[in-house]
Image 1: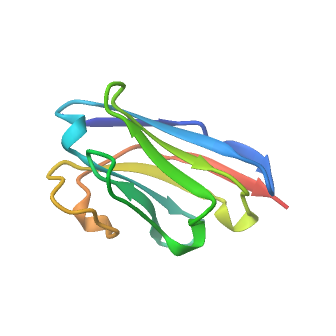
Image 2 (image 1 turned 60 degrees about the vertical axis):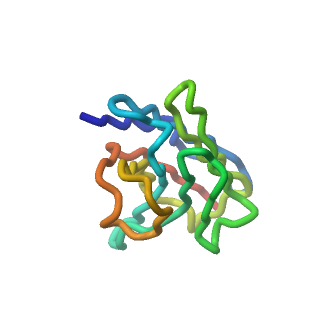
Length: 125
């Protein structure tokens, strides 16, 4: 069974930075496409970023390009989301997710088969 545990959320002022981590156990981490989604109150869960197993291909949601960086350490079975220049509209619960088939990098929820519990990110203005 694959388990994902996020950490690193918190309260930050606009313009600040946070680094989210997601530790993964179970299976073959280096073969998984890993992603980050977020869900603001009253809204749907939206794609933020994803990275292939090798790390060679990365996709971002347009609104976070140039501000967020997704990366992974296959030796530590961990994926990261470095978030800079944070804005109040980035406030949400951030979820780490794994696509264990890892065939294509996807931006849609249904492709991902394991999820973490989420970590709250709050950006004050």
